[in-house]
Each structure stands twice: as structure tokens, then as C-alpha cells.
Length: 211
Image 1 (cartoon, rainbow, N blue to C red):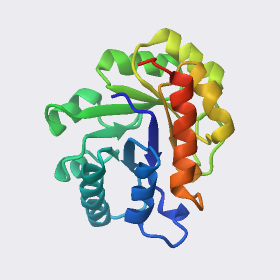
Image 2 (cartoon, rainbow, N blue to C red):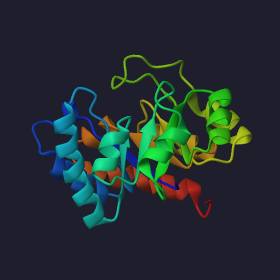
Image 3 (cartoon, helix red, strand yellow):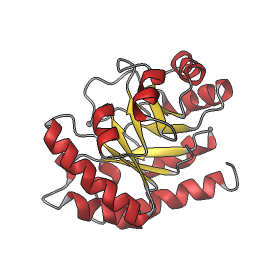
Image 4 (cartoon, rainbow, N blue to C red):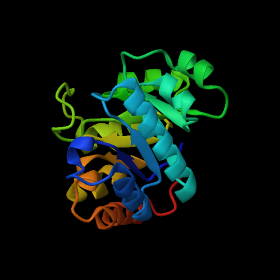
């Protein structure tokens, strides 16, 4: 799965705005992948948000990935699921989701990245790049040097994640990431479209024609 700007939901950063409006603005600014990640939602709340985002992403031509919840991903016909290291194995998730769906997994080092590739992941999330407020149980910071080490070890698309701001993006992409994933940098921005557009422009500039 080749993404360039991967935006993750976070209702704490909506500032009273509607999820639909914020995600629409993010996609209009260049987000090509949206991940539904709301750890404290009930199953019914996740399902409702998933249906809303599925309709919106189809309308605007973006992918929808659901974090952790394979059942919700299947129920809303999401494009895929993103797993943590403690979630169901990749092959089981793929069997449940059915053909043609993406399965990504969070990784924090070279060993986990290599294992993900061997297990058949479609992409890896790699991080955190910096300390982040959106996950309190974060692993040690990976940073751009860690991106390069993983890039040298695997061919999978790398989505860098964790505390990323505009000043970090160029170095992360230059070190081998395909994409950056953000929450507050876009969802929490006053100008969501402008924030997404600025990040996407940096990714596009640094990637050039690199697939």
C-alpha cells in the first residue's frame, strides 16, 4: 500500500468540529489514507464512525484503514486494518478480511519490521519518530536514523509515525519512509486543509518519482 499522507483520527483534537468536516478537509488537503483509531469508543460508536468515513473516503478517493478492530473493518468494508504487535497474526487478519484488503502492522525496530515483511504485511507503521501525546505507552524513539536502518532491511512501504511535525517530514522521507502518519498535526490544526497540504507537499517534493 503506497500512501503519502496518512491521517489518523483523534476526537480529542477536533475542537468541537464534526469528524466528517475535519476528515473531508484533510483529504482535500492531500491525505490519501485515513485511519479510524478511537481507543475509547464503544463498538457501536466505532461502527457508526466507520460507516461515515467509508462513505466519505469513497466519495473523495481516499483509503480507509481501521485500527485494531478487524470486525469493524470488515463490517464497513474498509480497505484494510492496522494491527499492533499484540493483535491477531497478520495471516489470520487477512483470512477474516478477505481478498484485496491491506494489512499493516506497527513496528518499532528492524527485527519487528523484518518479521512483518516475512509474515506478509502490506506496509509497516514505524515509530515513534518523536515522543507523542497521542500514545502514552510508546516504545523508545526511533527517529530518522531508525527509518534508514529499517529501509535498508525491508522493501515494505514504511509509514513513519509518532510526534511528527512539518520540520521533521523532509528528513524522514529522505531516510527512506514512503509516508508520514499524523494525528494532531492535521486533525488538531486550525486550518486542516492547509496543514495537510503543507505536509503532503513536503512528502511529494522529497519522494520525487520514488515509488
